[in-house]
Length: 448
Image 1 (cartoon, rainbow, N blue to C red):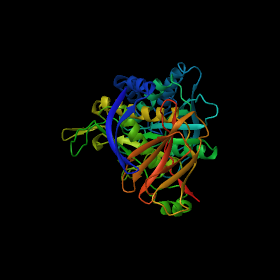
Image 2: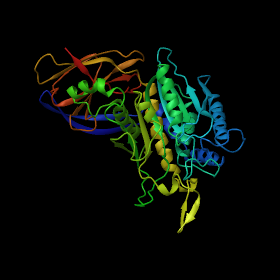
Image 3: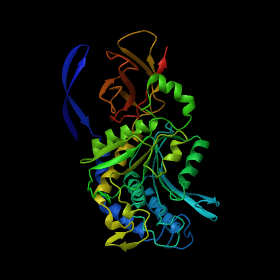
């Protein structure tokens, strides 16, 4: 499906009017259409049926507790793998948690459920990861006995990951996609921290992490605003990882708003809004909300590009609450307080972003900006990506005070001279695959 708009731009002093065609990849468009609100609702109802999914709850009972819930998610991944022609495998990555004197008071069997959809290109080692956390809680974070439905927090994120695995497992992508359901978020981001360190130690080439946490409710508890047309993406601008080593270059180039997480958030906004109607992706220039935390942070802290996806208006009457009714208000995280059409759109946004990334070539290499002469133009050079079939490249341009890329110029060359001053604009380059899928943008380094 094509969507046409008209743009006016100036090139070499001449105003040019052109029709801009936004092309949706028909494969991605079809996958987006298969995300189903009723399917998401059934995933959440099943998760709620386990009573509690508290991190320290039972791992031995067949129908209650986090162990039973993890086993059910694993069975779903294994079922979906049957339609992948052998590309998808599933497992529980297990370890034993020791008491920490904080939110863990006993040895506990832990496990992250992973569905791994292997990429079709043997030369492409990129990994794209989407996550939600399976554990739930009530008011007392150490209460492992009371029912804690966790429908929205974070049944919604877990259901998103399950639904993505259901829809995407039959499709082919050049790069690998990992569908991840982590444990231990409420006790201190434990499952994410475990996997992020493992990925760092084993040198996984993770290019992007989309963490979904509380993505299925459309209203707030205090303002009573109802809105199922916007979703937030939190991202940091400066890198938490080795900032001291990078600060000089960031300051020199003015790239305080262009960390890897921020670039991923921009990408998700552009691609998500391209494929999902009636949804605005709202970028929030913070790593996370006040007084809260999310499973993207352990990855961010180790240098990976990771963002948090969360609903626009949170309802705290239905998060971290004992199940009760007070003054006519029902407290508790139940499915009836969710909007499954909204969850469908947020899940589809994740799907579009991940699919476009995993179908695209790898990022360009060694992008440099020529600064050896005083000029009012800009020259960029880059090398071909390590993997993927490249049709060409988009050169992205925006004024230094603008939050989003304003122009895209297509070229088949590995360099370009632009009539835009390097002093006035930021530049980046994306590799474009044969089907039009774009890689993540890369910003230039100074070349002499």
